[in-house]
Amino acid sequence: MEEKATQTPEKTFSMEEALQETEARLEKRVRPGQILTGKVVLVGSEGVAVDIGAKTEGIIPFNQLTEKPLSEEELKNLLKPGDLVRVQVLKVDPETGQILLSRKKVEAQEHWDRIQELYEKGEPVTVTVKEKVKGGVVAELDGVQAFIPASQLDLRRIPNLDAYVGQQILAKIIELNRKKGRVLLSRRAVLEEEQKKAKEAFFQSLEPGQVVEGTVVEVTDFGAFVNLGPVDGLVHRSEITWGRFGHPREVLHKGQKVRAQVVSVDPAKERVNLSIKALIPDPWTTVAEKYPVGTRVRGKVVGLTPFGAFVEVEPGLEGLIHISELSWTKRPKHPSEVVKEGEEVEAVVLRLDPQERRLSLGLKQTQPDPWQLLVEKYPPGTVVKGKVTGVTDFGVFVELEPGMEGLVHISELDHTRVENPAVLFKKGDEMEVVVLNIDPVEQRISLSRKRLLPPPPPKAEEERPRRAKGKEARGKRKPSGGRREERREYEYGAVAEYNLYDASAVPTASTSVKLGDLYGDLLASLGLEEEK
Image (cartoon, rainbow, N blue to C red; front, side):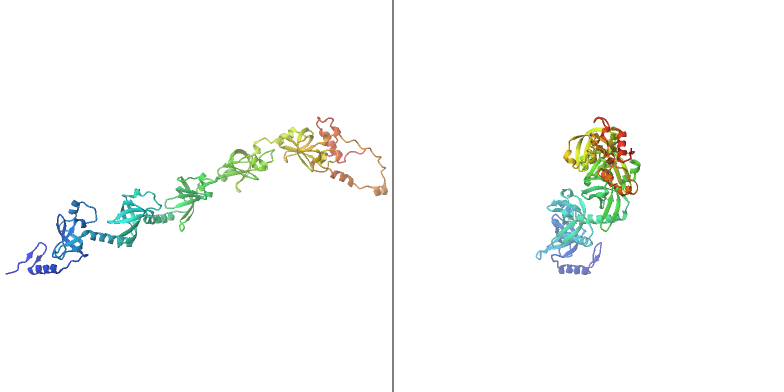
């Protein structure tokens, strides 16, 4: 009988070919662990039947179909007859010939293969954070559970990790162990890579003199850090403002928006130096126009030194009130006796030098000069009473007005020579004196006490010897040094001009000394009287 060929829509088999295929199936041995490709022939209530080329079909239980958590209905619709599927042999029963297959293990293997490939390439992957655990979070990567430590979630440590749960993030595989099924991810590595690229682009676009905007992120003793985006720039304390301050926190605070000028850029060290005050006009460039000599200004005392007080007229513009310019009458040992730090004062511009950045101010110039008033109030010859404020070897100081003292030189204390003024006069005593001279420029007052004392009794005149003539006169001439010795004894400066004053010119102690009498005494002291 002739063999009939078996024909199918796909291929026509002869009886001989069909027998050979059956024999091949019988001879084919299926071993656990093999990965095969088969065709789905049936989806039943317990699983999926797959033709893998063995004498019997293999069965994939529903719990071995996929790692995804699907419902029973979803599992039944996952595959349909005719689909090709890769499976792994789990178990072979030699007695019944039943073959147990798993698609889930092959799927997991494929996932690990893809993860291995991504790890070797170093490419970032998108993962979904599933839950927060101790020390970090767990994310799903192609059906594989991966761990992200808390330190690897951001560039800065995040105290609360709950915000990441349910989010999709981009991370990089930093550790992989297929045997232990361990995968470590890092989002920080991705952020650092992005930051590095952003920094490179930023430094390429940055150059000195450029104006940038940023936010103050930290204030320290030496300056402030300003975030410019990819990098933080440093504003040194000397570049914050023209004005004076104790700590940068007095001028800047965290979170403050600022504009600054780029001073220098160092891409290798990733450093940017900034200046805020560079965008503010230097007050010294306009000081001559704004504050010419003689101008009255108001400012705050910002510093005291032994030689004067510094006054801030405006931020970055300070002037010095020298200790000699604090008061007309007081001679303070320290400026703190007149002004206090933090006090607001009014002063007059005395001198300015914009190139040397120096501004000299005067506090006493805001008040009338009492020395000019003193000249009008006490002309020479005026008799006044004052209190002794000091006794020295060369004279006695007497106070005419508060803070204004005159000197009674030792030669003007009495008609007779006073060897030690401290024996006769004490501090606090009252003394009546006559004004000889007031110098308002040098701020000096010359006084005399002896001009108010009764004149000494005249000495008996000795008979004047006959003037010798010729050689006799020359031989008998006496040296003239006696007169000089007498004058040197009384010399002490301007006051010495009045040391031969005749007190008889003053009838009473309440009468002022006349100028004519003073000048007459002056001529007499110089030996210019006519010989009778």
